[in-house]
Amino acid sequence: MDILLTGSVAFDYLMTFPGHFKDHFLSDRLDSISLSFLVDSMTKMPGGIAPNIAYTMALLGVRPRLWAAVGEDFEDYRRSLENEGIDTSGMRVIPGVFTASFFVNTDRSNSQIASFYPGAMAHSAELSLHAVNPKPDLVVISPSDPLAMQQYCEECRELDIPFVYDPSQQIVRMSSEELLRSIKGAWALFVNDYEYALINKMTGLDSSSVLNNNPDSFVVVTCGQKGAEIYTNQGLFDVPSVQPTAILDPTGVGDAFRGGFLTGLYHGFDLELCAQMGAMSATYCLEQKGSQGHRFTRAEFIARFRKYFDDQHKLDQILK
Image (cartoon, rainbow, N blue to C red; front, side, top):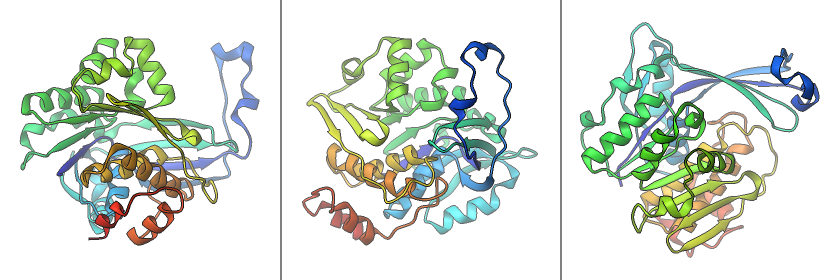
C-alpha cells in the first residue's frame, strides 16, 4: 500500500511548567484571563502531524510519502526525515516564509496549553493532489490549513482515492457543514474522545452514521490511558493502552498511535492488530521527549509488543 500523508509540518517548542495550570484559573474571572507562566525549560524539536506519523511508520519499516508546504528553514529537517527513510519529494518550499511552529507548555499533570503559528502551512491549498505521481493507494488528511483539508477531501473523491480523515485540532475552525461533507466521504475517521464528542455535538453524526459510507468503513477513537475504541460495521471493540515505564512528554502520542495503526494497514493486518500496534507505538512516544524522540528497532518493537498482545506471528512481516 502506497500511503500519502498530508498535514502540518512544524517545529515544536516544548516548555515545562513546574506547577498545575488549574491552580491559576479563577472561575469567576474566566472572561478576562490574564496569565503568564514562567517555565523551567524549553526545547526546539522537529514536529508536525504528517512527519510525526511518518517517523513512527519509518521506524517500523514503511516508507510513506509526505505532501505539505514548508518554509525556507526546512532543509535540515528534510535531511533528517530522509535519513529515517521518509520520502519528502512532495514537500513544497514557500519562499520568504518560515515553517509552521508549535508552542506548547506542559504542566506537572501533563495538561497542556498550546499555540500554533501556521507559517508556510497557510499555503497548503496551493498543493493539489492531482499533481501527485504516482497516484497513492491511500491518503491521510490530517490537520493543516482548513481550506487545504477540504480541498484534499474533494480531490480524493474526484480521483477515487480512499482517504482517512483526521480533523482533530482543526475541528474548531470548521463549520458543521464542512465537517459533515468531509466525514461522509471518508473511508475512516480518526479522532480522540473529546473530538468525537465535539463532532457529534456539531453535526449529529455518531459511529453508525459514519459507517454507512461503505461496509469497510471504521472509526478510531483514542481515549488516552484508557486505550482506543474501534467502531466497525461488525461491532465495537476496545484496545487497551500499554503501560509506559515512565511518562516524559505527551506531545505527539496520538501521531505515534496513527503511525503504528497505519503500518498495520500497510501490511493488511486486521483492525484490532492495527490498533494494538498503535497502542504500542504511542507508549514508546510517551516515554521520550518530543514527538520524534522515541526510537526502537523492529525486533525490539515486536518483542515488547508480544508481552501484551498475541499477534499470531503476523508482525514477523515487518522484519522482512
